[in-house]
Length: 137
Length: 252
Image (cartoon, rainbow over all chains, first blue to last red; front, side):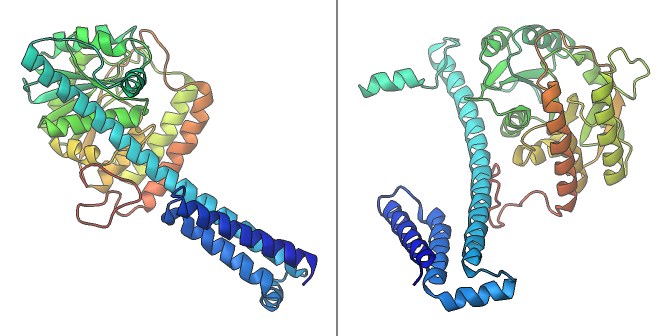
C-alpha cells in the first residue's frame, strides 16, 4: 500500500465514522446520510481495492489511478450539492406554505377574538420571540 | 369575519405605508362591492396597522415571501372564503380601482377566467415605464404570445381579475418571485382563458419599487428560465392523489 492509498483509506473511514456517529446522535437524518454513506463507501472501496481503481482509470482515460479517486470524490461532491439545492428548494416551498397558513390562521383568530370580546385591537397575536423567552424563564 | 361580498380585492404590500391608505380608500370608494384584503408581506413599517385602520382585512405574513407568495396567500384566502372573483391591485397607486369595471365587463363579455389590465393597449400612455423595463416587457410579451398563441402585450401587469377557476389554480400553485409572466403560461397549460383590456397606469405615488436596477437583470434571467422550463413542463401542477411533488403545494 502506498501513501496516497493509505491517506484516502483513512479519510474514507473517518468520513464513514463521522456520518454514522451523526446519525446515531440524531444530528443527521438518514435521508440525508444515505448519499454521504454511499460516497464514503465507494471511495473506501476504490482506495483499498487498487485493481478496480486502475481498471476504472484506464476505462475513463486517466493516466494516474489516484486521480480517478479525486475525480470520483468530486463527482460525489457535485451530486451532494445538487441534492442540497433540491432539499433547500423543497424547504423554502414548505416554509412559504407554512407562512401563508400562519397568516390565515392569525386573521381567523383575530376575527374570533374580536367577535367574542368585541375588541378591535391591532396588536400582533402571533407570539414574539421576546414573549417566548419570558414564558420560558 | 362574515363575507360581505362575493368579490375580493387583494392588495399585496411590502413597506407601502406611504400609499396603502389611499389605495384602500380609493378601492372602497370606487368599488364598494369589493371586500379588501391587504397581504402585508412582512413589512417592517406600519403598513399592516394603516391598512387595518383603513378598514381592510389584513393578512400578516410572518416574514417576507416576495410578491408571488404574498399574492398566493390572497388566492388561498379567496378560495377558503368562497369568493367568486378576485382582483389584484398594486399597493403603490399604479392602478386605478375605477378601471376594475373595465376588467369585470371584459370577463363577462368574453367569458374568460382571467383578465389582465394592459398599459400598452391604452392609447393614453400617461406612464409608459422607463425604456429599459419596456424592452424587457416586450421581449416577454413576444415570447409569451408565441407560446400561448394569443396576443399578449403587457405580461408583467399586476392589475388582474381572476374568476373562480383562476383562484383555484393559483391557490394551489403560483410562482415564487416575479410571478406574473409565468402565471400566463400556466393559464395556457391549464386551458384557462384570459384576455387583456386597456388600462392606464400611473407612476407610483411614493415608496420604492421592489424591482431595482440591480435586480432587473436577475428578473430577466429568472423569468426567461421559468418560461422555457415551464414550456417543457407537460403538467405544471400535480393533481390530488398523485405522488408528492418536489414542491409542496396547497391542498395536497
